[in-house]
Length: 246
Image (cartoon, rainbow, N blue to C red; front, side, top):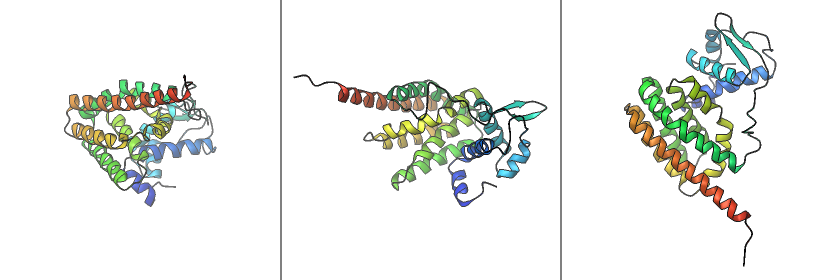
């Protein structure tokens, strides 16, 4: 069933084509539509079926390969090897701990500044426009009092894709579940949402003007701010757990 419904048109405007496609392909493999050992349809066929670009299909297939669900073989196509994705035991999404959230923030601080710089250097004009539009959409959601989690995630994913480094982008995409749940903690901090919106605008502007150095510095500041929030929450939890001495 094509993804071009009213809701999915909205998702496309906010940069969620990739996530929607990846989730749909995963679900179909899990449901047994494509069994282990079978070949997926061609990239062109999948793009036509779901109404997306061949580039989005390629990115989704690379993600499926990194999850251990398919194997991409040049000349033979894409072969399903498992109907389950491999989970990293270090980051179980159903067992969120503050230690995992701190680890995530530290990892993002190392990776995302370079992704922002690469996006400014390598991203297509359409990809850079999409990044800016997602930043605007996030601000609109915040002003309207709507949940901005999807646009927040889409912003960082769009930058990862625009960087055109499949290894780094897969590292970010593999953190998605933990990232979404960690927001449940960090978004509660007073002022965190407004700061995130502000950083996203500045980063998007730097990428749009292809100022790689500025994009790197702004993303680093954004990640430092996020890490600071996580460490603050960790300290609060430690204080609440500590005994009171008289």
